[in-house]
Length: 262
Image 1 (cartoon, rainbow, N blue to C red):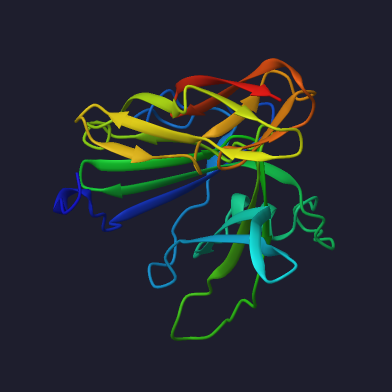
Image 2: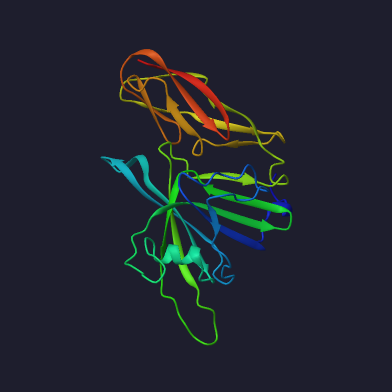
């Protein structure tokens, strides 16, 4: 539901956790504590806050005559920037990875699990890397008599092989509306070899509202030798024959359509 002030979020508290790969298990929910293998970065600079960054290469493909045929998107990248105010074991390990107490070496970044906790009163949202992240210092550390020496870090998030970036955990008030089902249209279809058809995935939520989630859903094909499917639900005919089942999955729900290649 739009125009709901309770859905607006003001960051009142934040915690960043660093976990050892292969050791740190995810908390069960947003109220569960980070367990063994996790360590907190500590105090964060409130002026710098947390900055979530997104980059993606895009381009247009035109036919002769200036007709736009396709827009491609690739090389998606996501990052989080934060500034640590504490010099402790965790921040020292991020600042000089692979070093030892009393002997600091040229940084050779290592990949870690990253947990980010956002809080506003009882409202909470937590992001945990589905795969891993690489955290490096991104700026100078200034030492003076009138301000704290903050260490600016940037975490680059690496997705899983399936493309998942984060595991998201939400407080109950944010979980009030969830995806009840999704539907793919048309339910069946035909595409010629070398041609493209566009499928649409529509999510229905528990409050009966709907949303076109074609560009958020994960699309798969049962028979790539017959038909392939790209992000957004674009199906390309490869070879004529038996139908290919195209599946869209979003927020744990899925639906299918049968595409015959002629």
